Amino acid sequence: MLCAFCAFSALCGELSAQPMLDPKQMSGIPRPVTDLPERTISVRVIRGDLSKNIPNQPVDLLVNGKAQTVKTDANGRAEFGPLTPGATIKAVTVVDGESLESQEFPSPSQGGVRLLLVATDKEKEARAAEEAKSPAVTGEVVLAGETRLVIEPDEETARVYYLLDITNNGGVPVNPASPFELEAPSGAVSMALMEGSSPQAKVTGKRLRVAGPFPPGNTFVQIGYVVPLSGGVADVTQTFPATIDHLGVIVKKVGDARLTSPQLERQQEMPASNQIYIAAAGGTVKAGQPVRLTISDLPHHSATPRWVAVGIASVVLILGGWFASRPVQDARGTERRLLVARREKLFQDLLRLEADHRRGKIDQARFLARREELLAALEHVYGALDSDYTNPDPAGRAGMAA
Image (cartoon, rainbow, N blue to C red; front, side, top):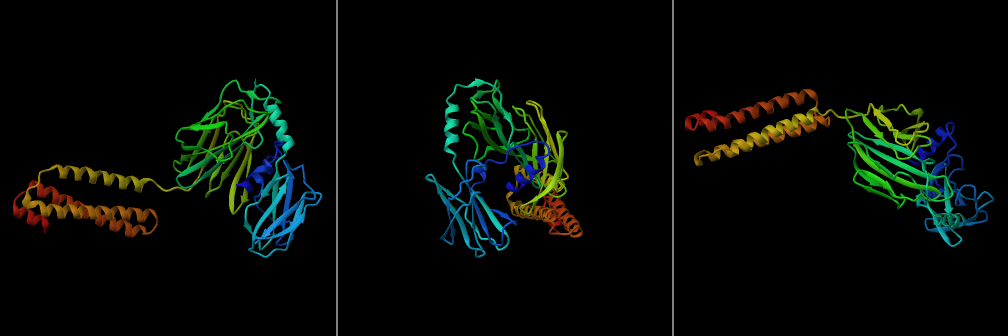
């Protein structure tokens, strides 16, 4: 998904000048590249943002637990290599007492890997703390920067994520005139707050609320929920409480999936991590104006076999309850119990047959023939049970059993 974000940023370049991802979010994550010598790892160390390289900084690369140390150059980069393919790698450095570590990952057998280690910009944090002490005023926030809508469909549902970059462009904290709240669309389930969200955010049921005041700069909130598909189509309609500077949408392409929306100006397909993503961009969406997205032509299973099975199950349960409520004479109990056991076995065989057919484990001809056989047998059993109840004489029962 990180690769998809980078691809999306390139798509948005012609529409708007937006900042890149927060460097802290990328710190320590290995990124395979092809612009380095084979089996080489480049570690870049910065303070706060990409414009603040840290030169002459010792960086330790742990290769299977053994450290190799290289100092960063004027661009804040330290290079290691060539390394043994498959070795366990981890980059470590300490900046002003702050320990920075990368994820562990295997040394590449082809190409290289770039890493970014991001130290805290303490001066920037101090300025932000001073600004936060200022009294809050009534003002506006916008959804800018890294605000994205991400949709990942599968065969029966779609996972929807809102990555919200709530931006206060002023120099003092602000409280919007209306609370920052949104409710997930009708049909959405399992709405939850994602890791990395501001502590100001809270999800209750299907409603998100972000409490003010909003400090100068960015407040990040990320939520996700699930929507069911209907006939291979996912519809998402959402109203946001703040203006979206530039609408951005990323959809994981499944099958022949298509993304349509009257608010998207352009889109294109982009590969990332062995997946294909539809990256789309649009213009400004005013607060209170619904964002409407439709993902169609998604692969899906027909619901007909399921409803057939449910219908059969309902009939069996109703008839079973009816028969169970009828008085049974002791002399006929054994025969009825055998018929009921036969009925239950035939019904279970029918359910298994339907399930195997949905999964493609049985061809159409065998499925139809076996299904006809099972239904005929069930009809015979139900007829025997019914006749056994209405015809109590032994000769009638003997004839029925035959």
